Length: 425
Image (tube, rainbow, N blue to C red):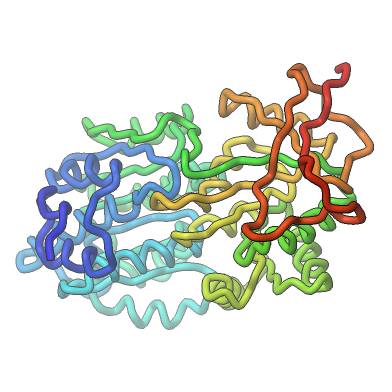
């Protein structure tokens, strides 16, 4: 058994654990970040979701902690490496990766998240922890309870820092930073580098190495993006039609609101789909159960809000649907980044009504490209999208071995989909 990870300087127990899961070749972010982290310098890393950034910091952190375990402080409740993340789902994903790559090492990891009882966490914190993965709010709860000792932290990671700022965690982060030892290694990972992120980085990082493997707000080349024009009130009907006609078996659907997620999941279930919703108002147990059943294929459609979907990591998730376009265009990039991960192909479908033309324009401006608006026969919208491009035919792939029929229309040799013809603005 061999691995290209060995050439980056990682110890054999770590790259062997990765190789046993089929990970032998580093991704670009891993190839650049791992040597930097191993050298002990601060790091500012930019990478779009799905590029393997979790391993880019988890593997070298484990290497360093194992190498210095004999001389490190191991007092009660002490923490050596602290990884802060914005959501519970992402925390679970990161801690799972830490366990995966560290399974051949004598290191202890722990996760601290809200939505579950705090007392069992306090019990586990009575022993020293090598790697602590936490959300800011729950970590502050433990700090107030004096159940965690952060005075010996050697390495700090801020993962998905852009999302933490978007969610209003900056005050919590600054409170946590204030009690950490000044001498430590700092790693900041972010999908985008907004002015706010730059300001945070300037105050946190000391002479950092910067790595960026994708242009700001870029989407993965492995994700095919399609936009279907449809009236708002017919979106659910069209979504059901697409799932059935194309035989989608694992679909992550995004809505803007928690209420909208619940309502859509209920309607899809009434349409005969196995669907569940996941959002911030759900208990942690319900969120964990829904995600597990979705990964196992027991749930066909998972309807999620943006915050709840952060950290959903399914390497071969084939389909993401924007039931509604987000108000913040950067969230579009995060949403569709749930598919097309780890080199796999994926499809991102957006159902766009004419009242969302501003959100669509914002996405196109962000990505510096325009998208054709396709129409499913039988779901023609009453209102037209303004267009400044000549109409073009868009063909939808056919199911192998079968000629599909559009609803209430006979099979024919023409296209099922076409772009909205040009109209006056």
